[in-house]
Image 1: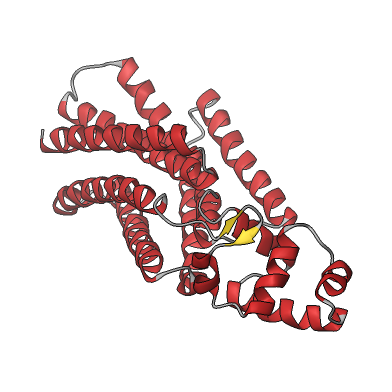
Image 2: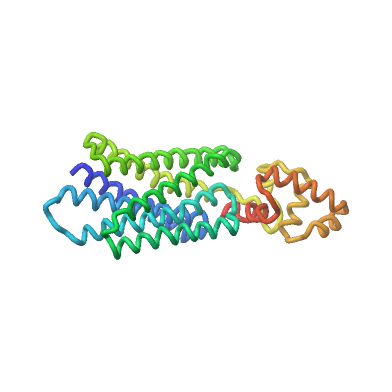
Length: 300
């Protein structure tokens, strides 16, 4: 009864936060907001799965095929969205574009996950498939969190780093609780089961509310480029020299190194040296990434 009540509350909070994020996305239409919204949607489905599981435990003697199907569908849809969106969300949060080979690898991984889930739906007697799906989900989250832990220290402002650190910490907790849930499923431990239910529910509530407030705060950040020119916020944010500002503005307008050199009456080699310094200050590797970061700073 406690688990059913707790997850009913979790569902209510998740629906509230998801509704708020959907309204924010409809207003601002940013890629980061879309990925946050989809990530929260995955948590909503996972919460619905736990609610169905709690219902089944409460009404053990009542055979309701609809609840059983809803349980499978909620966990499958939630896990699938989570596996697909988690790497994309981490990429957006860290402002690191994915390479073509990374996108292809993700496509194969996601296709394998969905394919196995469909096979299990058609052949439910293949009991090894849920374990493989669980391992794939845990591996996806673990790799994404490892990348985030290694690269999140040089992100924007102090509040941005603090927000990433909070998300990182809660996600690590989620991973541990997910593994605990797997352990309890394999080796029933009543005392741990109670702790797991309450801890996982608390995590889902905290993350749902945290994502909503993070998205709201994110939208208040100032743009660094306006009408093809760096704003004062952009200049101070990256601590660029006057010459570097000129080069960045030419680059944003699509000019090649030779064109920039001619426009500023400097040698092409000097342009390359300045670009190297700019890449270091903005934490990117090439002009394509620099342009993406600058133009999508407050709407990526």
